[in-house]
Length: 108
Image (cartoon, rainbow, N blue to C red; front, side, top):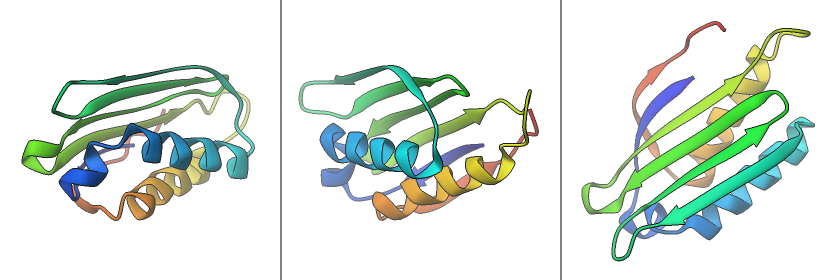
């Protein structure tokens, strides 16, 4: 699932908040994190990619525009993870207190 989100600049400039939301959601959904990178840009937003055994999640923020792109990709190879994708997406939207500008769901 891919989305463009709108949120407060302070939220979109806070990688620690995002890390907390991602980690909590990964735990609640029973996913397995195998690596992560969070990179903040001076005076601007951040980029984060979390690798999962099930695939990945990523976010790129532009607080100066109040926007972010967010992607959740969980493989359906051994089991249907469609519900977990939706739950992960919604948890991040709620946690960031964001509004969905656009959303696209692709069965993978």
